[in-house]
Length: 198
Image (cartoon, rainbow, N blue to C red; front, side, top):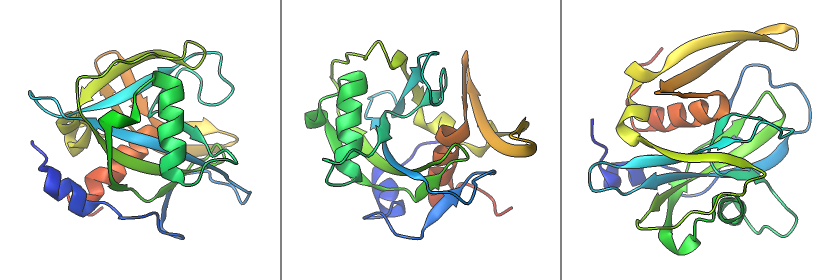
């Protein structure tokens, strides 16, 4: 499966839309912390890939999980793009000169108390990465075609805070991609028309 970049651009939101969101199981009626992540699609000649990180195991939020680079909005951030680019530079050292923002996915609300704006970008190789050893245990790439293919999306469930929560996962080799990261990938698959109506 190959994804045409013009089709990708056309499927995205040109700007974040208030009230337009995807919500995980277990989102409580509480204030959600605003955050933004970069959904970085690397333009490899052999096929586009997605750049992902594995978080270090000692972090307070989402320790050890596979994630997009990003984090919570700071007071000085002017927009979700600023947050995503700043956090990406801090976490993995990816220069914003290699990044072209192409659009947004709907806000993603997590059961852990965040409302995340996914900022989709094309990344032009070559680039040098410098992971922050406090936050990032590993940086790796997964073929975009693998992640967007619904055949690779597994349904799982777990008991969390006294209730059964359902979630998607996309295992890839030794990596278990799940939770918010998998949910945002599903969101892109849906916008590209790759998911059957359920």
